[in-house]
Amino acid sequence: DANPLRPYRNMDWLIYLMAGVLLLLSVIRLSYRKYFADLFRAFFNPTLSQRQLKDQLSQSPFPNMLLNIFFAIALGLYFYLVLYRQQVFPQAEPWLLIPGLIILVAVVYGSKYVMLRFFGWLFGNTELADAYIFILYLINKILGVLLAPFLVILAFCKPEIARTSFYISIFFIVLLIIYMYIRSYYLMRPYLSYSKLHFFLYLCEFEVEPVLILTKVLQNFWLTGNP
Image (cartoon, rainbow, N blue to C red; front, side, top):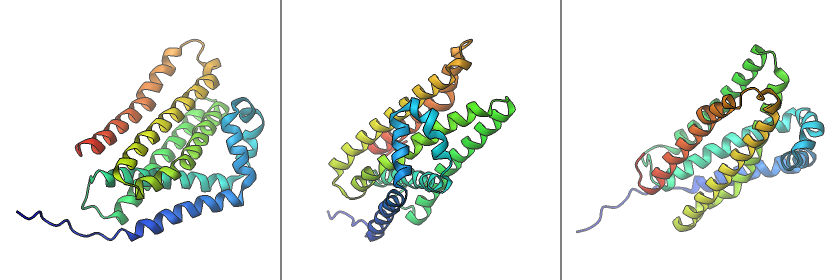
């Protein structure tokens, strides 16, 4: 009654991948100290960010682009590590799955950026669209930085620690999403005085519902291995 041997998979590449991700974040952090300081000031001080820091951050296109790229890499790698820990798609090649997830994240948020720009132009309110895009991508950048330590834990720690880390990371992701929509509501409140129902429907249908569905699917993968 011998148990079948699982095929050996060399995971040394994961060490180099994680080292590269952390190195990228470190280079961005050390090369653009002022940008990082302004980024976190904008996150913790909503009033100051909208009035004084928004233009400063917008005038730094290169670190802004680098952190957007880092967000896509961090979130795509986060999805892969959660699926890998639960042995979902065990036969999938990492060199195909990881870039696929990163590209998926980039496409989703890139499409959302284009749609927000288009609707801002269509309804003649580009200023409101710019302010909302600023909040959205500010939260994304903070999330990318926040995910870095969780990536290390999910990649290398024991299953019990990794499982706890997963739930803690979900908690922080949900908090950031709630914070983003609180800031978005106060931004749009002057335009919603006639109908707050529209904002609520938008929030549930296009923002909260996809996040809840994705979270539920990942939890089912983690607990049962079934979607």
